[in-house]
Image (cartoon, rainbow, N blue to C red):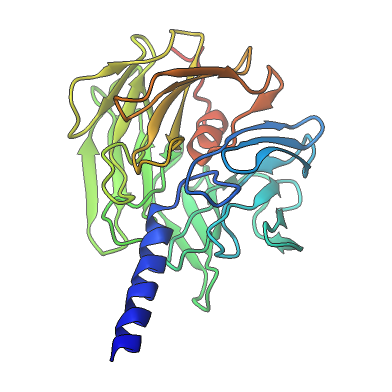
Amino acid sequence: MRMRRNALLLLLVMALSSVWAAQCDFDGDEKTDITAYHGATGTWYIRGTLQGLQVVQWGWSAAIPVPGDYDGDQTDDVAVFHPASGNWYIRYSGGGVGLINWGWKDVWPVQADYDGDGITDIAVFYPLQAMWFIRYSGQREPCVCTWGWADVLPTPWDYDHDGMTDIAFYNRAEMPFDHWHIRLSSGPTNIISWGSISSIPVPANYLGDEGIATLGIYRSLSSEWIVTGSPPATVWGTYRVTEPVSGGDYDGDGYDDKVAYNPETGEWAIRYANPQMEDEFLHWGWSESTPVHLNYILLKLGGYSKDLF
């Protein structure tokens, strides 16, 4: 009986760790690693919190960085998506490489764990028809569904705390307020008014709620971060100088932190969720490099930038 109980506890810990996993954790210590991808050379510069500097050549100028835990070892793998061929090239953290064809030149990568097994599923979003194509890591049949319409921005995350990423998008064209449209994996759908004309969607686990996403917007005109269920807005950034990078827990406390990134200089300004942590400013990258967080990549593909408003 005790062995069965211990086994169940182990399975529970493994399941919860997959829910709480930090994004862009390339050394498996449950902390986000600051990473710059240099597209011209296909080089990843990873500032590992456990292993220190890692320089990995994986990609080229026509490839898009798509990090994720594709083998379920709780360590993110370096990977790129090549739209022209639809190929995903994965360099597994445990060794070996993978080549998977899923997509074509007009789609955006939206990789995430859509079935809750702790493994990143390869997925793409076709913006012209708002179609989602999800290739599950397990034995399930692929998902092909329409959720959205032209000119919306995909914002996949786990919004209902069931361990599975939900299909979602942000529509900035619904005046006078922007709307979030969330198709929960548990069944129902939500349409939430949260945002305005100068808002950029930045969902993340700001409240430390065991991996569940909180709706967040960044108002570029005032550099304000506004989060549902959170205290008053946080001013963090500089108008037409920095861009928001969301979805990173840089100190491993279970709360995602706010980052203002300067794409011209490669400077990262981190406002930690933990009030006992001092703000951190560091240079990691330069004008020709980019962060690799999924939400940041989608913002760039969707035409959001510091000069948009």
